[in-house]
Image 1 (cartoon, each protein chain N blue to C red):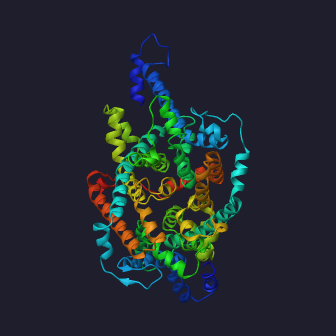
Image 2: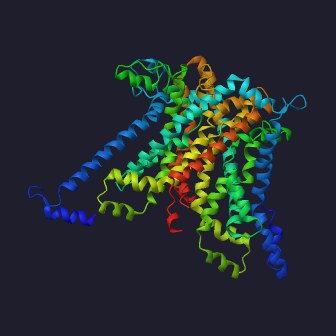
Image 3: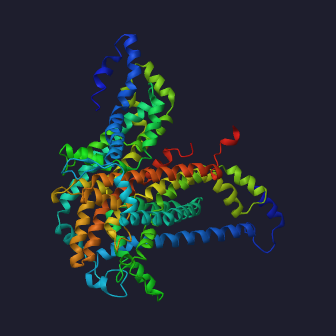
Length: 313
Length: 300
C-alpha cells in the first residue's frame, strides 16, 4: 500500500503548477485509500451482505435458497434457545452496566486527588483491562469453583457455605456480573481524564456559596462529567451485548443454557451448525437492538447530559 | 480556600499547636481514611492475581486442602515447565507473537496514513468520509463477522494467519480517529514551513508528523498489542490445525485436557505464563495506555 503514492509524489515537486495543483487534489484519497478499500471490503460490504444472507437458507454445502422472513419468524416464535440467549444478555446488561459505571466513577473520585503514591493504584486498577482474555476467564472459572475456589473459601471464613456458582442456574449469571465488574479500570481512566477537565473555579465558587462535598459532587462533578458518563454508558452497553470469550471459557453457556449469551449462540449457529442465514438474521437483530438503544439514549440524553459550551451559544 | 483558612486562624483554639487547627486535622484524618479505603480496595482487587500466582506454585493436594493455605509450602517452579511442555505452547507463543507484531506494523502504517489524510490534506468528500469513519466505529463487529469469514473461506485463507493479519493493513477506525486527533494538535506552522522548503506531503508525513507523534503511536502500539494478544474469537474461527493455534486458543484447549485430570495448579501455571508478556508490556508502557485514552479528546 505504501508503494502506491511513491512514484506520483516523486514528480509532484518537479511537475508544472497545474500538475502540482491537480496532485494536491487527489493525494488525500491516496492517504486514506487503504482504509477506504478496507472499509468497503471488510466493513460496508459484509454489513450489507449479512443483511441479504439473513433472508437465505445456506449451510455452505448446498446452494443458498431464499426463505424471506422465515428466519426472523423462527427466532421469535419457534426457538426458545434464541429467546433464552436474548433474555440472558439483557439480564447481564441490566446489572453489569450500572454496576461497573458506578464502581468506576466511585474509584475515579477516590483517586482524583494529589496524594503521594496514588498513581500506583491507578495502574493497579487498570491491570485487569489489559489481561482480559482466556487466562483471566480461566482464573475466574477457578475462583468460582465450588470446593476449592477463592470466593467460597473466603465466604467460608465467616461461616457461610457459598453456592456452586457456575454449576447453578441461579448463581451463574451473578458470577459473570461479579467477574465483569473487576474490569472497571478502563472506564476509571476515562473518568479520571474527565475529572481533570472540570474547572477548579466551579468548585471554588461552590465553596464560597457554602456547598458541602456532597453538593459539589451532585451539582458540579456529575453535571460536568455527564458527557463522559453518557459516552461510556453507550459503549459499555454495546460491549455488554457482545460478551463471548468469558462465556465460552467459563461455562460454555451452561448450566441448562443459564449463561447462553447472544454471541455464543450466534457463534454456534454460524460456525458449528453452519446455519449461515439464521446466524446472519441474529446478527442483524443484534445490530437493530444496539441501534435502537443508542438512539433512545441519545434522545433521553438531552434531559441529563450537560455540554459545557452550550450556554455560551 | 484561602478565605476559609484565614477565618479559621483567627478563631482557632488556644489549646492546639499552631498549624494544627481543626480543619487541618479534619483534612488529615479524611486523607488517612481515603488512603485506608484505597489500600484496602487495592488489596481486595489484587487478591485474584496473587491467588493465581500462588496456586500455580502449589501441589495439587495443597489446593484441595480445606482451608486452603494462602501461600505454597514449597515453591514449585517446575509446575511451569510441566504445563508449558505438555502441549506445544512454545509454538503457540511464536504464532501469537508473529500475528501480534504484524498487526502492530500494519495498524501503525495504515492508520497513520489515513489519519494524515484526514488531518492534513483537502479533498472532496473528506468530511463526509470522516463521518463514515466515525459511524463505522459504532457498528458491532459481529454483524460483519459471517460475511468476512465467507470471504476468507472463499480465498482459501482458513487455517492460515492471513485473516488475522491482513485486515490490519486496512486501518482500524478507532486508531485512525485517535491519531487524527493527535495530528491536529501539532502546530500548523510546521506544515507551512516544510512546504516552503519544498517538502511534499509524503515527506511531511514521514519526516515531521510521524516523529512528533511518538506518544500517540506508542498508545496505538500498546492497544494493538493487547487486542491482538488477547484475541480469541478470530483465532477460534480461522485456525484449526494444532500447530497453528495462538496462545489463547491453546490455553482453551489445555483447559479441556486438564478437566479430566483436575490439575488446577498446571492450569494456573499455563495461564500465568501467557500473561507474562502482557504484564511486561503493560509495566513499560502504562503511561501510553492512559494517554491514549485522553488523545481521543472526549471532551470535544
